[in-house]
Length: 429
Image (cartoon, rainbow, N blue to C red; front, side, top):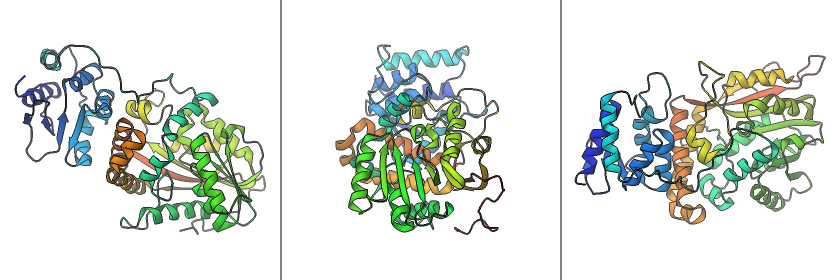
């Protein structure tokens, strides 16, 4: 099968109605495509079968995770070039395959089938998780969280760095270090919550304990962190003990719906609400509202997607759902604010920090690439490739304004109407 790269370039151009924007190097050593462009390495014919049997995002993701395809050159540039064909879903996006009723499309598919070899669909990589959609029971949420967070604390330490904070940092400048930016984010949350010594703080989805440790050490609060991940909890408890804070910080392996020991003075939810699901969001907001005392504050830090024309349509990112966040759902920020207010909260401040997440993700990608051999030893090649693709593509999504992230400050305002906030709210900046 001589010159497979040229054949692939021609057949995909026939499907797309335009040349591929990346170069191809095929399994036979041949190369074709724009000189100087990032190179898509197609290591075997199985990769072509994956794209044929699952055209679009999921097929390409399976080929990437299995190691059937790779990228040589700038990963971000390659993803930026192919994203209109794979990830962007606007009406003007061409899509990977046009209608099979068109003769030239059918001819291209027949050519790819001949190039791909025996037409048997390859099994998905073992890292793929497929479940009934978005049940959000306690059991399904626990399994989904375990899939994502129990990859191994050493793996996350390699990616996240010493801060062990797995959410958007808060950068003073692009040149600031990741550890400083994460510390500044923790401090920003504490200041927005106006924490004072002796108060009770609940951190929902506490991760490895970074926020509760910071809040107890720097602001003198008594903090409770809850997580569904056993590995996170064990790591967080050790950090609490090492910091000498066991009298002020408690880590529980517990569903947020099972927290009943309110009232709390403040609740933080940092990067956790994405796991709640649209059908459960009002329940989530209502439960946090009941856990707060009058005048208590909630800081809800959450990724947002852009609104769709039809918000009733069920739509999730196939790669994210299958490999990264099973059962995760994103909502527009307006929907989040509405649900918080329906639950009884008064929303007092909203800050978009979209660009900060792009900077954070690029640093995580750099950490992963720098420690690639150790990452593979810790989590396996497939899982490491999942995280690399997920974080690099997400960085571009934040940079291109396809995703946002927002901190929403809400108050359980008492009947008197006194929110307890100063007239000039943003005293934390």
